[in-house]
Image: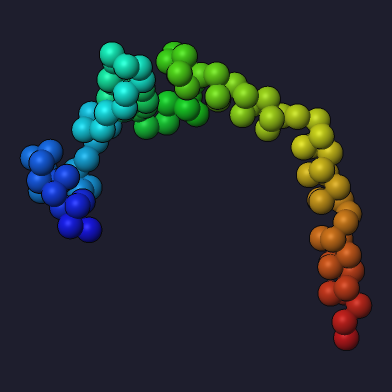
Length: 97
């Protein structure tokens, strides 16, 4: 914890919760260092849900959308809704006196 306090003070901050992506750097080659702000661009609130123009985030969102709409996922959800353990538990509850 002492080291965290030292890092916080060295960055000119009063509390660790004030760290932002601009305060953290990453070496990506022998000659280049970039901040996390460069690597991970800021997203406005709700940007992923409404769609974003930033290519850094649009590809992972598209992949998640494809997975969410996958037929095998819908089939599994249907099985859970129409039968399986949930239905067996419902029947078990009805049989109790």
